[in-house]
Amino acid sequence: MFELRVLNGQHQGAALPLIGEQWSIGSAGQHDLALDDAGVESLHCRLQRVDDNWTLNAEQGAVCDEQGNALPSIDLTLNNAFMLGSVWLCVSSAGDEWPSVPAVIPKQPEAESGPARNDVPLEKVKSRSQFLNRTTGIIAGLLVGVIG
Image (tube, helix red, strand yellow):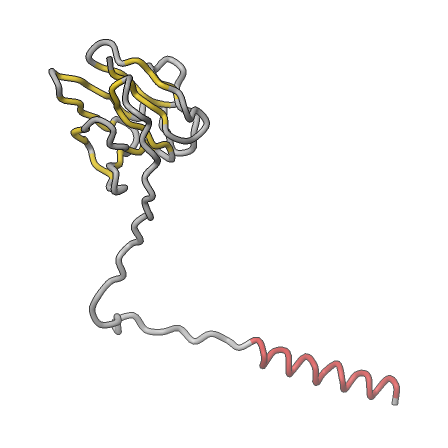
């Protein structure tokens, strides 16, 4: 027997026995596995088993592999974690030890390489210091005139 295991989040430690061929996962209560965690969509994905092959297909949300790469579909291997929203899960044999949550550092967007753009003219920004100097001078003049 196989299980879909929740490795972290609000439902950490939950295990769904995988009996059948297809399971729906999402935040809506009518799914086979309902997850209320951040980033989990109403119908996030579907898990399918064909013979000894496990496939995770994205629906309304991204599915990420163990390295954190978002993919439309993932071929799963037993005990290898995957991520839905902020939740790590895995498919395991019921007798296997629970794997740990992968330590994945989110990828940063790559900076554009190449020369800086010169085609957009720079806009001159007025300095506040000039305004403050003028205002300070007017106030000082008024005080000298009043105090005298």
